[in-house]
Length: 278
Image 1 (cartoon, rainbow, N blue to C red):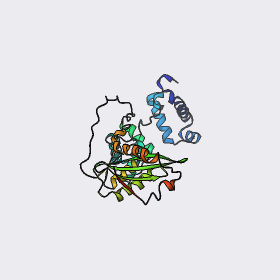
Image 2: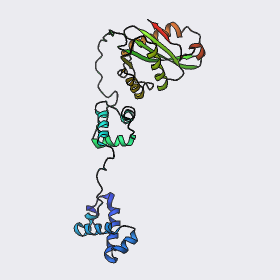
Image 3: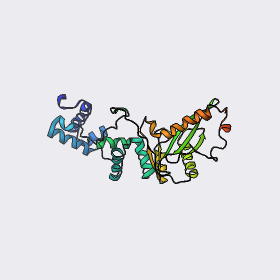
Image 4: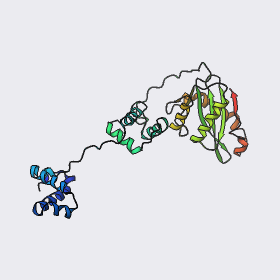
């Protein structure tokens, strides 16, 4: 057997097929089918290819790419999420489930990326950093045009609690809540409190990329008719008014208050709203 014409990964398979063909030539198709547990049409096809092309005809002819089971419109949605929205596979899966009510596995989404030849998303920090520029101070003209949301970690004795703060850019009205957990469910509960307490409608909500503000939170905000904006990574100054209010809270309240328990620090945090104006 001339091995130079056969790819290394197929040499054993060609050797097995050649033994099957030789047995069929000596004893017939039916005995060969019984001996090797193969259909006669399969052995006949191997025999004809061997007679026409030699050993090259016994090389497996597997398709280079399997046919996708996903519908064409679903493939188009995946391509849109990667090109336009710049989502990775986990975010594409959540986006398809929440927005389009379609359930697709992560492996299927990754295979679709490879099949379409979509490039990898650039890692954060790979781009060349621009020269620092003078920050431009801004203020929204109408209440509700931009509400900044951030979380501050507070120590009460030996435990940590999390102060959720929403601050309107125009009026400086604030809504504060304390939560035992910093996660998606606390963020969703705080969103409902902010909508209920603020005396004006919210048109835009902005937050950082923390794990407590995942894609599911963003989609819930959009379903409520509010535009959600993520600030740039590692740019807390874009939520500067909220950050400055946290510093004021630390200097004027948390550093002076002698609080040791969650109930003392925040009585009934899910029912009582704190509305302040700086």
